[in-house]
Image (cartoon, rainbow, N blue to C red; front, side):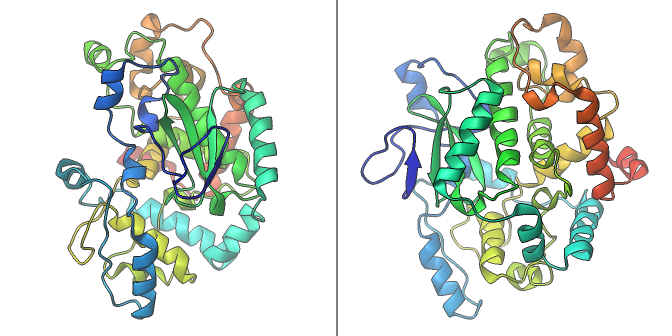
Length: 365
């Protein structure tokens, strides 16, 4: 990462020196064998950030939004990955549109929503103070390396750097009322479920196959996304429901977001992985957030949320069958799940705020 502050040392260029991988398999705190490190691929969300994003943004703006950016990447993005996420789904378009319209009706614009619900941008000292307090709540002080950076397309990402669980936080997204939700997403969900997962008999790919487990997503990201807005007065799911935007993306987004630089970020996320952005297709992995949210809310009355956290990186659909085999002694439970009655009330508040219809969810998920 080009510009970062970290609790650990980075090299002089600022780029991470070790292989990094996504939060889906975090964490392996013990140092792995050298051959295991060499087989790891870079964290997908980091690898998909174009190297020349700043230069291409300036060309795009100077052309009055007519230039098709030509992105370059440190390593070629695997074709199989691009093909897997090439086509966007319209399965949840009704819910996504409803969430966006609910926000715009209340706040008038995304910019007003950001200021009202996010608050002011935090200084680095304020960020570190909030992070320390949160780590104390979860009992994981000293376990996770934290980096502050300006080079993420997302607000934050969990990864492995130098064999250590590492959280990179985008300084531009570290807002007064949003930061703790970000920490609940990354530490309280991804990291804690990863710690619990490492103790389970299905912690490896072979183990998952042996128990016939479903993929961890969309449950993993859906749960984390719900935790991002948990306990907010206005827990709108805007970031999990990106505005629907058929081509041309940038011009169409203006009806939802006036700030051209914010619209640019949406477009880069939609076209990341592509070299020539004039070509059809997109990177649709972001849709997993809303998919997971709606599935969890649909089954919120029957999910054992503490067990879902304790069993590790598993789908809510596998919880019942795995309960007899799980290693539950000393399992970590996020601090915000201690009061389950309050937790469930917050899920109801999220349903109401985002105008999610029970009958529609029953029909779709």
